[in-house]
Amino acid sequence: MFVALGIIDGLPVAAPEGRTFDRRDIATGEVVTRAAAFGGPDAESAADAAAAAFPAWADLPPTDRAALLLRGAEILAERAATLCTCAEHEVGAAPDWTLFNIAIAQATLREAAAIADAIGETEPAGAPEGQRYRLTRRPVGVVLGIAPWNAPVTLAVRAVAAPLALGNTCVLKGSELCPKTHETVVQALIDAGLPQGVLNFVSNAPEDAHAVVEALIAHPAVRRVNFTGSTRVGREVAVMAARHLKRCLLELSGKASSIVLADADLDMAADAVAHGAFFNQGQVCMSTDRIVVEDAVADALVARLKTRAEALRGDPATGRGPLGQVIGPEAVARLRGLVDDARSKGAVLVTGGEAAGSLMQPTVLDQVAYGMRVYEEEIFGPIVGVIRVADADEAVTVANDTEYGLAAAVFGRDLPRARAVARRIECGAVHINGSTVCDDPAMPYGGVKASGYGRFGGRAVIEEFTELQWMTERDSPA
Image (cartoon, rainbow, N blue to C red; front, top):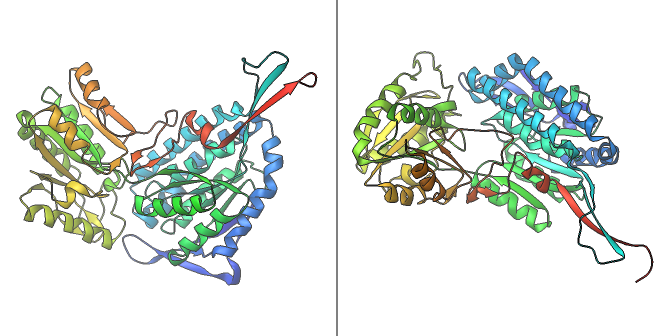
């Protein structure tokens, strides 16, 4: 059994009065982690520590901050075996998914190190005669990061990497579903040499999540909030932040469509769609939920997709498979309800639909239409629906017929036409001839509509986690 503690001011700490909560193994149901259960007032000590560490960290030369983040990337790789074990037991992640997480997390830290020198002063032109203008970009203070369970290494690192690089100090509130995985990530970064209090970590029992988040957002030292998770919870975080006039960056739910045009390379499309729909059991915000395909090639694509889905099936006897496991029995019940609802309304089950414990087989539904739950709801599981359309115009209409707008894909050999289709899709990222599950920390990533606002990645984060001050200067009185 793992023991997960908080990390405050550089030291592992138990919750007051020794309060703990248990996280059970995703497959066996046995207790796998006993974690510190911080409450709202207890968590404030993490923000206090971050506030105390902020002045010295902000004054550290950018090259020094960058070097520590690069060392953190190395340590994450050194602890890959531990992270794979923790994530497998806590959230059912397959080793390939965790290793992919680590690789993206390393790239995220390297990209953050590359923007560490964005803090500083410039002298823009345009000031009136006898005056000078100065623009100073500086860190904001303490940043609260709230990370989810589904990509536990990548998203924990993303929550803090850029803020740290830009001279802020951080508190990471970990997910109650993977406390040991998140603690391991934070400890790896601290072991890279971060000074005491620069990065702090708290965990909480599920019933205390709201109180802990509210206390941290309300803390006077916390100046920015970033949250990755469901739209439902993101709305609550946004309301709390608004109440205290604090900016937040939200990456929320998605409903990614992959449009397959009649001239597409169908083998390429089937490979990419299978990856986008089923990697990590489809438990990714950018997972492909809907395949919007022109009628002329729909039968051929569905046949190819069936073959690829069946090659990814797990073993019901052991509950293991190449895709890992769904997060729990409640999720399996919800997913099976989606399948039953679709079939009762005319969808055709091409393959899959069965579940054994927390293992659900890759599932393809054809003839999906408006009015079915799989058409409208974020699936967050290994199910993909095929929607047949007459032409590209109808395909765009269907792709945009959702409250979400995070990721999408378009497949076609005529690249100018594919780009024209992609530009009409209302979402933050579109991939032409590629999977919707695609991440590059050098690029800005985020959503529109109910998928949130703000951007992680690249130089876009500079605006998210810094303040810009305008200064005027005269040699003599006006």
